[in-house]
Amino acid sequence: MIHNKLVRDRIPEIIEASDRKCEWEVLSDEEYLARLDEKLQEELAEYLADKSLEELADLLEVLMAVAEARGSMAEVEAIRVAKKAKRGGFEKRILLKSTDDGQ
Image (cartoon, rainbow, N blue to C red; front, side, top):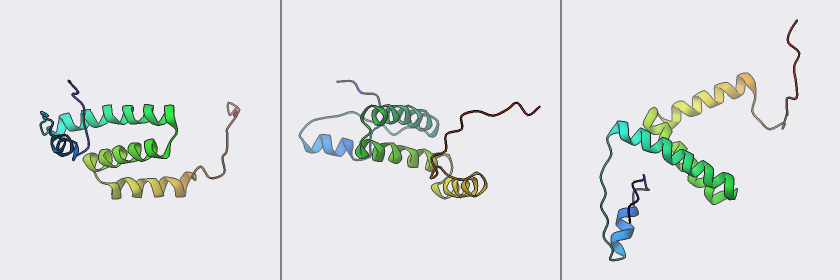
């Protein structure tokens, strides 16, 4: 069976522990980022279809990997906190319905 997709680190070990064989490789930085973006789309689609906490956890795992690959979670968290302080979060559940054109 051909997969050609990014998988969690222990997947080859798990496959081989069940007396099956698999072929895998370690990706370059550039290919890793591209495959993370694909995985992010895959996990988002699965979450949107299912809405389960398990799918949300998978999505978060990929988001954290993207953050580390592009900088660090600490950097992302600092940006998140600054944006929340400046613009707020989503706790108040505000739906912006319209604005005037400013004239």
